[in-house]
Length: 274
Image 1 (spheres, helix red, strand yellow):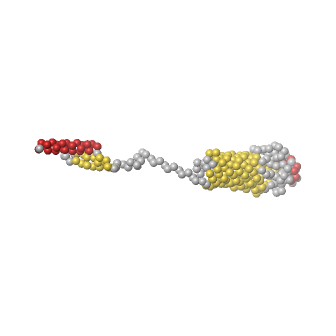
Image 2: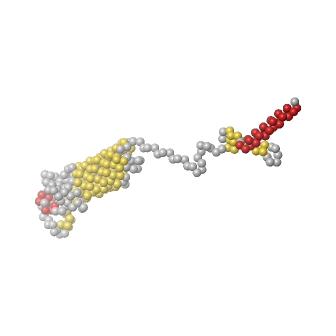
Image 3: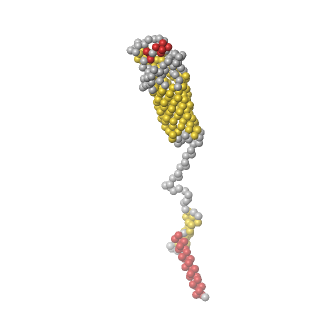
């Protein structure tokens, strides 16, 4: 009986030593904590200590959190920009128009452009701007109707004339529809677009300017011969801050009852959005 009891005690002791040895090597994990058993070298005491694992869900020191995606702007929204542009008159040498110099007959636009983004590929817009027209004639002083009605029957010779132009300072408003070939990515970008619009001009100052060698500069005004209201249609294509345009005047600059010949109606040019 004593022999059996001794064998049982020895067996339990061996199992206990082996269990302690295994625990000391591998440890026990509970949640974020890992328990280790360590036996001291100089005595038989057993030390138990715990280590806390770092946050599993937290990023490492070298890892950066991904930035949240930018929320897409909802429609509709409004945007307003300052714009400026220059255009060149397309000469027309038919009998319906006075002959002008295309490279020196220009228009200048400056004002505000408003855009109302209604959908991803569609917007409505409007402009309020100042427009300056300068038509440089080739030989208007030789036309009898123009000389009698506008120049007060004053007879000029080509040798004496340095410059002959018609100038108009206008306040203009326009409305347009915008179609996007490439939609804007955000409010600061205009994508790739085409505008179709109509413009109305009211002249605040219009006159014929003749510069002569003998008598200097002269201005000739005629409220009856010059039409103060002008209507035009235009098309504009652009991307970002640049655009090209073509404008076609639908009404006459001159009163057809007095001056049967008018000015060329087509202007094309470039615009810059600031």
